[in-house]
Image 1 (spheres, one colour):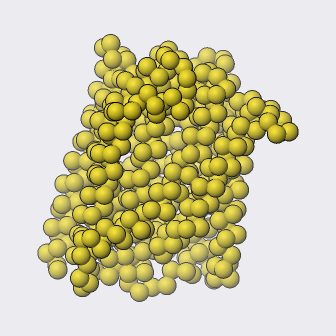
Image 2: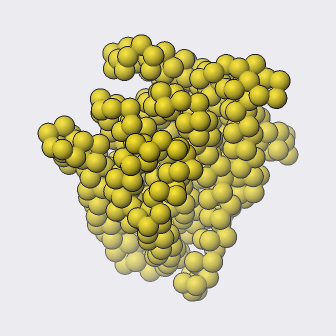
Length: 438
């Protein structure tokens, strides 16, 4: 057993999570770039792109959950003394299979738009965006697979610097293709979709070529390892689907209100998602740290890494919550100058501030459990928290009281509190079981 002190564990998590945070923010800023340029183009475009993302995200991001099992499983293998470098081509193959499913499901969502029917103008923009960006699944999944491979070895620089560069590239490309700047043709709203597609494909190819030293590794595909990725990843994917679908269903419900509420909801969701990238990165880091310690059967280290990651996530959540509460106008003004949108945005951002603690806690708890290959309880907790409690409550408050869009965000806050509580109980039981063997 290794004698790990808590300050050292905190330092290790910070060093490991730091580049991941910047990389995750870079990935998120690709979507944010779409929103910023859409807001500069028109209120109608901002509303439509937000709705399009609300339809696509439950598919594309939840399917990525199938790959979030890669890093913890490889970390466990490293903890047992196994060489994981020979898994490179297995991960490439697995990622391409996942991307094919993601693309097909995304294309099918195109037909959902006419059923939801947001009017001819919004429908046209939404359907165009979905049709084009569905094919970005190939770039997104290939990038994620290689990133997980690197992350399992605690190598974070290449993948995350690529994501940061991609965010800058995407913002410039968005502007060029929407407004026809710098000699580029103007594709208007469709330019946002083409920019996202090009950006995701470029970043995946960049990371693939950066990893050239692994190309000579064995080309043999380990199908048993792929089945393990699937077995552990499927509940993660389900959990992500239930959670993201909850947030996106709120966007779809709010789409029944006026455009100022739709736009404000999109901004609140985007701002909250940006803040979420930090605890999500801490979750990814601790999943690997816990996975490696679990593979070594050093359960005291598992306990210490879990404690320190939760402390770090909650500290950040407090900072973000206070920022959203104290400076909502300054934050929202970065996106839009529309007074009505800002007014509604302030109301929604208050509730985003309220659930920061719960959001940070639940995603970090999920990462710890992922490192232990305990993923099914997370999906059950998310399903109960959102779909049995939060969404029905939000629906009632949104449509049957004067709260309107605020009602749905109150429901989300309560959902996150329930999920965090349930996962804390699961982790406590797991830790009690592990520490008995120390």
